[in-house]
Image (tube, rainbow, N blue to C red):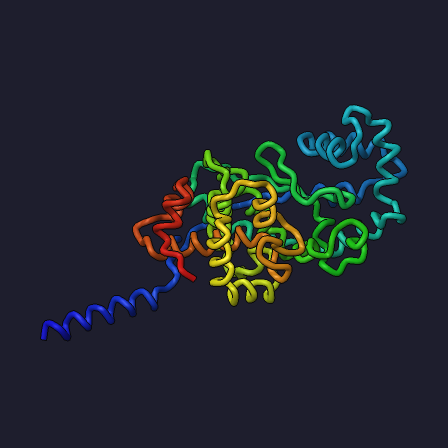
Length: 336
């Protein structure tokens, strides 16, 4: 009888491990935050270009924090030189050679309604406040950048160049970016990009080691948290992949991991290795030209997920606070 009892316990343990489900970390009914989105883009695009000096003075009065940043960092004009700015601004708004005028019209059309950005931001920052009540919710500025910038930090605020999110097939992007960058240049990516940028800024890398292991676990933790904050967002979208790229990673996950182990890449610190696994690009050269870029981050995400599934006593804040990447790897029991 004891023999059959032991067999039952063994089979039950296998079932529990094999049938584990995703953990839930947030109670129902968390109140969404009230994220303020400032439409500097609309104010700028609606100025009277026949009376630009007065318009410039009004913009400085209405947007005292952002206007100087926009003038110097985007237009490259000394903020105090309002006369020169008044001369240059109509050219920036009405240029047709580089497509700024056409793009500005497309911006006004595409972003006439931003509820599909506002709602996921409110939900994500509501969850984030639950985890980290001490963190300040940023004010979000929308602006047109002349294809110059996607995300800017201004003190505790985040500015988004929404002309960089007009769709992967937008014709003028062919002049300014590589093809692999277009995947995330869509309106649907804005909320995720904002929350991602906020997490990387406010939960920074603190390890004294700079091996690939530390970098990929850190970034993987951020991606794991980000995926939980972006309610209903497919994981491949959170990662900035296509569905096909995500499927490729899942199909070859075991091979990828084995290759990283065999090459001892986890413990390397060479810049070329780190950039290959972590930076954006057409592919991850250390693995294959068929492998999507940022494969180290993707594997780090899978390790973080495995760690949380196998350590039910750990909270999300425990995960983010744990700086020992080797410990996370070992206690994740990650075996694709």
